[in-house]
Image (cartoon, rainbow, N blue to C red):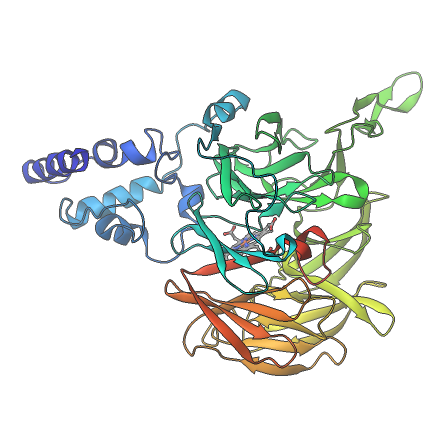
Length: 515
Ligand code: DHE
């Protein structure tokens, strides 16, 4: 009824006036679902920060035709082509004022599912550590798969546009999922039930969990903050403004858990700093640098913070992004803005120690590592070049560049597999997946499960026996391969399955997966 009223009022408006004011059209037709301030509500936020990442059909098409499998209706009959274009352009204009999203705003969104009751033990007979979650971005759901039988135990709705890997609690019972609009969802795998949700940011990048499982960090672009939540009840522990040493505010590109150091590490988009935030209540004092005293010259400043959430700045020459961590978490490699180099930072001493050429936009966040000839090597795909770089992590030299059939996005392997799998995500060959020998570094097989369909992202079962591959299409599938023979075992229909995450591989920090 409401929708009818809105549509008919727009029709009347369009009939009487040559072209309606897009802000007025928004107020009449969109605000009810997308929020008066365009920050989202029942529907997603409609601001440049979120629209810039829109995949698939363009904005005008979505407004005109609606979005399948969502509540979004089409307004093509109600609005002229000019009005549609004007509205789309208006939605791409930045908000006049930076929105505020503080602890009380976040708290006000905290919601618990009234149907949730915590089961005392798993409500299924499957191995709870061999559960694999499949994020289906086609209709914003997650399927919970039994990793032995590949039966779907549950399929639950997620917030709109989930991004990044879900994060599991250390024993593997709970999982936390984040959407690009900053919603964090908690789900209980044992009970197969959603626990609750909270909106931790307005435009967010990813989440990380502390090593002790108590805290969840949410990296935000909007506002420029790190939100720290309690994993227990999703309450806000702290909203940390992110401001560089020179006073410049910065977006947080990503946050990572650093288990050995009991901390989070943050990649910052706008300032040449890496931040480390302690999750250890006994964390040593952190000094902000040095102050000048007329009598003594340069003297050490008083500690600015210590204990839980103490923050340390590591200064680098330029902003670095998309981190890969060495196995012992002593080093990270970050990508430079020109997408041509990787910079190695030693977290102990807090400075850059090496630089390596990685042209063609390396996707270090997808990097994985393994032992080869007594050396630990890592591999990274490149988003703009059809190559994989293999790097020796002892001296950070590039030991081989493997040519692929196009730029790829994700890599995966498993301790029990002699191969690693690399997708081709972009270009005419996006329907193939390479399987590469970890020792010879030669491509042993190039799979093409469905000609013409994008094939991407792999996850292994707990024992590494099977590899699950996505047919990344609306009418897609997860294909289960025997990881040794590389033969197809079964095909599970799914709605644009993106990432897949095995509980055991994630909580044990398997070397074959990114974290
Ligand atoms: Fe992702 C992980 C950043 C675009 C799907 N992506 C990540 C992570 C980061 C990141 C920092 C690690 C988070 C984590 O798991 O904690 N992604 C970026 C970008 O900067 C980039 C290039 C541009 C952007 O839009 O933000 C980008 N990512 C995409 C996509 O276009 C993908 C293919 C589709 C989508 O859903 O938007 C995409 N990103 C993913 C997936 C993961 C991911 C499925 C988790 C991979 C995993 O196996 O852990």
